[in-house]
Length: 404
Image (cartoon, rainbow, N blue to C red; front, side, top):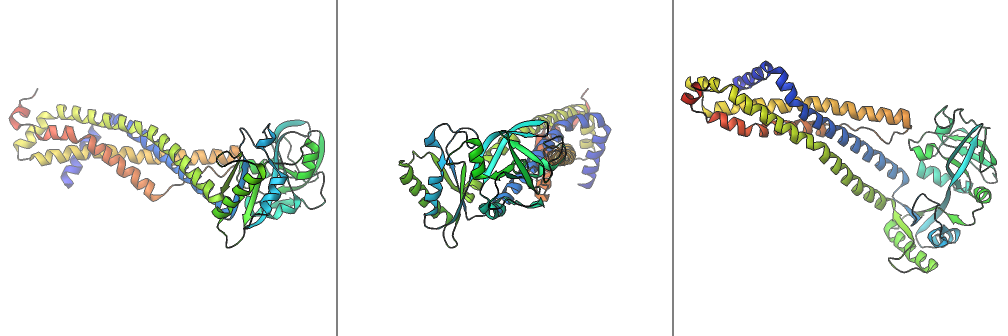
């Protein structure tokens, strides 16, 4: 076995250029698969962390609207303060908070942007901090009695991240032409939406935007000892009654944080499988390339095979030599592909962190991933060489020696 391995390795070295060209399909495919899976695992882990932070006892209520929150044109399709009050009275609900998110025209210094302004009640800041990892790193948080005050996400305070000039505590930002004084800067959360947010008192935002009692999103926290799914069902029944809607015709969505995570995981799993499947096509191409190379090798080395058989080599010896060669092509190509895939994943993670300011997109490199990729590439190479190896092993010594 040892001699067969070194003979196969020597044959591949002798055909260096052809071997490298043969491996291109393998290492491109493995690099794409490793890169996509590592990024997928990293993103899944980051999302899991976000939901763990949100907590299993949270229930999210949203309107069934097309487009961003707050863009509904029909009053029937929006949540209202009346809905929020109804949810408060549901058995098992400990507390309820609502937020107002509206596309707004913002101006800072001599720059103008269209983005979301988020209205929250200062009294609910502690709950939002618990769910969204809000932490003021400069200045203070919103407090009861604040009117035209604002706290801004981290990216607003980073030079040229959003604005050319960094926002500071004491700066003035205009929302729809109305001035708000910045009283606090939030720490970096890694979520681009939160890090770019402008948070102001909800009632003040209603006044500025001329919005009555709309709630873009409502979050309920369940009491200890209650099952969030049971409480969510109770909220659905209560809202149906309040909004006079029939079952399966609701204009709102009610989901627990675990249900949201399950939904995301299922959808993301399908998307990732499709992407990996597309990337794996190059592995099939690489396997065909190995098979073609091995068939060519059999033809080129027909006399050599005849000589080995003439001096006592068995069919199994010839078979092993050629299987070792094809397996080595797959393994070496897989090793290069794993290295490229790790580099690809880490590069995307670095670009996401520096250019987008998010740590949600990160590469998760694990031993099972590396081992699985190497094993798979070795099997692809070995299986691709089975037919050529069988052909070589069945050659008759006399016919092989006479082959021109």
